Length: 274
Image (cartoon, rainbow, N blue to C red; front, side):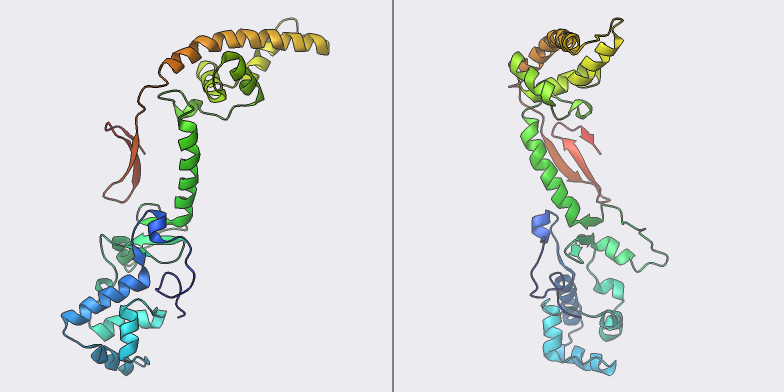
């Protein structure tokens, strides 16, 4: 097997375990460390291991065993299956165990407990293994991008903002913000909080409810302007109430992982969301 970024080779690495924020190490490195522990526990030398491997047709020599233990050489699938015979140890006990996170490729890692479960009869994680014991580098990258966006928007939203009312401001809300001397985000949020929809949608809905709809472009423009001014009058007091709490310390979140490895976002005061 050709060495790669996760088996301890010199190939260019993608997202490393540390960069992904999940910790852990490549499979080849952890396997090598475990094999060395087992060998030393049996008081065997590297030459002893290499000699036994040759009995099973593997072209191993003392340097080969050293390279595997140091994570510099990956093992092939046949070599992996022969390890229990070479080390006289069940394969499950040769793999990284509970408390360890093992990167199998640049894109996916698995916790040691789940890795050993792969050897259980009937184990079937499905088409897409569930997050928790499985870690996806792509998801971590996406979460970082979302976190950066939200971090910038968080300070622009009202204190204690509920996610159901958060939306990107449209052109009408951006213009309204200038007239109300506030931020577009405050206008967009408060509109959805009051009416369940954006400023433009609410304006058009009220226009459609009029018993005497305008019949000319000029009349339509005037009607829209009249409704918009009324809507701004409704928004203004609610926005001012939000702005009174603008400088109030905001609740902070922390990320925690439960015993099953499932990630939760928790309020620092003890509340949480899944």
